[in-house]
Structure formats: C-alpha cells, structure tokens
Length: 152
Image 1 (cartoon, rainbow, N blue to C red):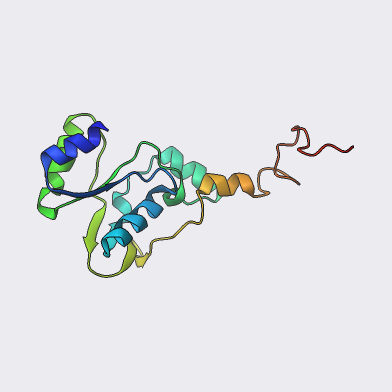
Image 2: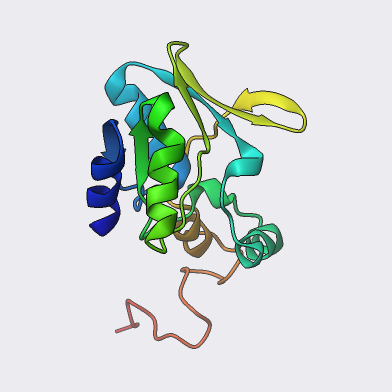
C-alpha cells in the first residue's frame, strides 16, 4: 500500500488498520482495543461523500458501519499528524485528522450535540441491508430469483 509507505516515511506511525470489514467504526474500535486505549472522533472531520450520506439516509444505514474498501486508519504521534496528512495529500491521497487517541476506555464521537459512544456493528451495514426484508420479500432473494429449494 503506497499510503502506508508514505505515512511511515513522513512521521512516527504507531499503528495502521485496514477497516474494510466492518467499516470505520469497527476499525477504530479494533485499533483502540488492541492498544488498550480509547479515542474521541470528530464527526465533522470524517470524510464521507455527500452521495454516501444521501444513500445511507434513504436506506437507514450508518455510514460508519459501511464496508470501507481502500481506506486506511493510521495512528500517528500527535506532533506528526499534520505532516503525515500533508505528505499523503501531496501524493494525491485523501487524508484527514479525524480524532485523537486517549487513555479513557471506549470510543466516542464528538459532534454538534456533544459526545456519544461510537456505534458498534455486528456486521457491515450493506450486509445487514441485504439480509433484511427491506429490499426483498420472503427468503431474501430478489423477486425474480429462482427458489434456492425448488419443490419436488
């Protein structure tokens, strides 16, 4: 991953985590749990595309629990965070400082309404959507799909 090489060359990287499975929220929970630490995440700093927000609102999904292919969570020494972000941006890679790790257990979201716990997801929100009956009726298959167990 070029982003990992750029980050480690630009600053003191403490940890990295690919949040593909389970999304950003699960990735942050896993990263902090492995370190025995907590974190406070700034909801306004989370880079979520407007299209993603619109789709999530329409389908009642939380973007923090969506599959996050191509993303990389990087825990960096506080004094190096801006340098690492600038190095990634200089190479055309989107990067943002989304929060800070701290000694207080748990992961918190800081937003317009104050602090709240970061949600945890048993499975990816897209998988949950397809497993629900909100898209399909009956066995979860599309309406025109053949039955998985045809009658004898």
